[in-house]
Each structure stands twice: as C-alpha cells, then as structure tokens.
Length: 339
Image 1 (cartoon, rainbow, N blue to C red):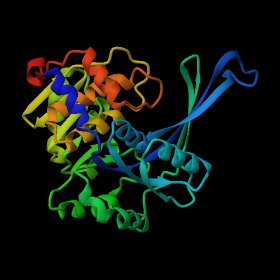
Image 2: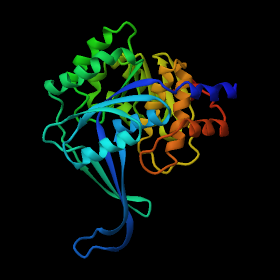
Image 3: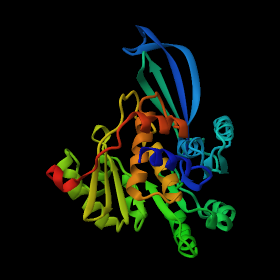
Image 4: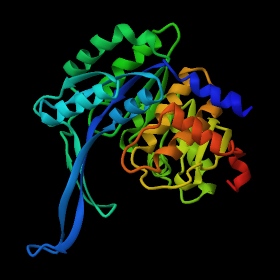
C-alpha cells in the first residue's frame, strides 16, 4: 500500500495546470540588530544579505513546476525593475507565464526585513486596482484557445485585482463551453467570496473560512457548522479548510466531512503553505487521484514547506521522503470530534 502511494506522486509529472491570479515578488532583507535608533525607538537593522522569491500566484506556479507539473501562469506585472526580476524568477523556475502590463502601477512587492530569524517589519508596494475589460480580453485572447488543455484551473486570489467580476464573467462561459469542464480550485480572499459561486473546491484557512460567513472558527467543534454554512452560501462542490496545527478539514459534500491531522514535524514559517496545498491538490486531481488522497498528499507537502523560511516549494523527491518517514494519517469524520 505504501509503495502504491509513493508511486502516485509520479503521476503528478507532466500535468498541465492553468493559474490565474495575483503575482507578487517577495523581497527579503536579512540582517542583525545591535542597537536602537537615536532618531526613534525602533531597531537599527544592519543588512547582511537580501534575496527575492516568487510570491502569491507565482509561488503556486513554482510549486507546480517543482512537483513536475506544467504550469501556465496568467497575471499582471508592473513595467518596472521588480517586474523584470519576477519574470526572470519565473523563467528560472520553469514556469510558462503570460504577464500583462498593469498600467502605471508597480509590480506587487512585499519587502520583509528579518533580523535574528524574526520579521521586524514588512513594507508593501502595490497598485490595488482591478483589471479593466481591455486587460481581461487580452488575457483570454491568449488563453481561450488553450483552455481545453487543462483539467484544473487554479484561481489564486490575494485581493490585488486580477480575480475580479470582469474576469469571472469571462471565465465561466468559457469553462462551461468545454466538452470536459476543467475543475476550478480557489485560494480565496474573504472580501471577494461572492466571486467564487459554484467553484469545484475552495481552500481557505480557518480564519478565512470564518470571515467568509461571519462566523469564526475557535475550535474543531466550529469547523463543521462553518464549513456547511460556507458550502451553502457559495454552492460549492467541495471545501478544504486548512487548520494549521490541527491539520485539515475536507468537505467531500455538505454532509460528508473528514478531519485530516497535521503532518508537520517542525514549523519555522507558514508563509506560502496555502500555495503549496492548492498546487499539490490541483496536480493530484489533474492526475485523476481521489479527492481525499489528493488532500492528504497536499498535507504532506505543506508539512515540508512550513519547515523552511519564506515561501518555499517541494519536489517529488521531498514529498516521497516525507510520506516514507511518516504514517498515512487516519482520517476521522468531523462529527466524531464533537462538532
């Protein structure tokens, strides 16, 4: 059984996935703090190094490529040096991309200043506007003829303007017109929940799930009613709520929900863990693996990346090693947890 599960990772290779969403550049400045500024009561960070990584939808695409998939990333980028860096990182990661100019706005960049393994401050550069109809048409003129190539479409919504009403209005009829409709997976932004009506799978964390329906998740007992309310509100086919140290909750349907315990052995940084989950899940579903097994694979993958600093990705070899070193998790109906 274990050998068959490890072999299932091989089926992720070559699967084409379309990612639509907010592409971001993660910029890290790393140093040490030895004194407080005489100008204000703030630490002075002496910079030792700095580096860039793909963030947002770019990190989803990078995870898909690292796992052997074939991502096509569609998003917006500023006409600036950050946009050039982002494009170069995508190419280095083996990601095919279609990045349209977002007018005069900058490339979305998050600069994190880190000292002694702790984040001191984050500085965000972003445009904040939604796509106009011309930009939407430019996107779909390029991807429309290729839509039939994809079994899975991932919407990576960080609220930076790509996932908007105009894009969804254009996407839905194109998907409906396909002979075999691709699955639509969404990493959501709660403030935009109304855009995801009828999605095949939503992957919020506990905080986001609660915000989507105005009912917080404070314990495992809250997960079932919040999940059911969210499925009803958005008419979702499936729902996966990530629960941090408590693992995941998978709603195969409104009345069939499972708790999947966490698999992380060490947690240094949860940045980008949701990107890894939806990337692995999308690849597994495209490969034809069952939903529950696909979620467990994504749980193993997330357990790898949270042990690293920053938005990270996982390879097939790393995923297999994590699976081989840990037990296959025992799932439990949510109703058995006092829900």
